[in-house]
Amino acid sequence: MVSESLRESIRDAWAWRVRPHVPRAAHRATAILLRRLGLEKRLLHWLIPACPRANFSNLSWATAEAVHAGLRRACEAGLDGDYYEFGLYRGFTFWFAQQAAAANGLAGMRFFGFDSFRGLPPPGGVDAVGAEFSQGDFACDRATVERLLSRFGTDWSRTHLVEGFYEASLTADARARHGMRPVSVALIDCDLYSSAVRVLEFLEGLLQEGAILLFDDWSCFGASEDHGERRALREFLAAHPRWTAEPLFAFGGHGQAFVVHADRQHRNERLDARGE
Image (cartoon, rainbow, N blue to C red):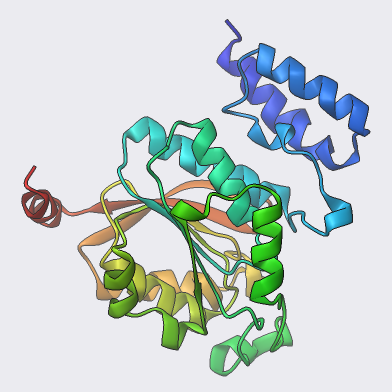
């Protein structure tokens, strides 16, 4: 039995940091070793071959690691819900989430990806500070994303892409049309305060006790509390005091994970609504 300390050492001090630079033969050998050691669930990213020729890779492996860790925690907590991702770019992390869910035994999970497929909207108001982002950043057309997801084996029976800028696409009608279930894990990778505000308001009706929220751009805008995702979450929690967000872990020098808690009254109301 491999010790927990060894697992953490491999994960945090070695494996994913050198992963993009390892020759293919060495990667295959390491993948075999990790499977034999029983580390597949913890180090799934090592078993995913890089796909640079297909231009299908992640901007940050730390984000993929965070998604993997969030899904593993959801599995351990017995959360019944779906995966939501806001801001897909070329779709690698979205695809990776499905592989991580399968590795953790989350066979019933569905995957919802939200993107304009035209890049970021024009930054305005507080989002225009510092010119950190520009209109059209991270644009990738839907046909390309679908082609890449299909090429690498996405299960479309459990996968849904919702197209449009968030003011038009994040609606109660979209929730009802897809029969969206509570959030198990949500990756919020939409960069801007204005977008994060709309995402959190959309998710409010889908949150549950123990849901994992991953903010990929938590430290953008100089980690200012008055900008970006930090401001959006602070204002959301102030407007919806029945929810609290407990910091879980930081990732990649730019992201932050939270676990959501409901106050006792709201938690009981949700349980009653489900007949539990």
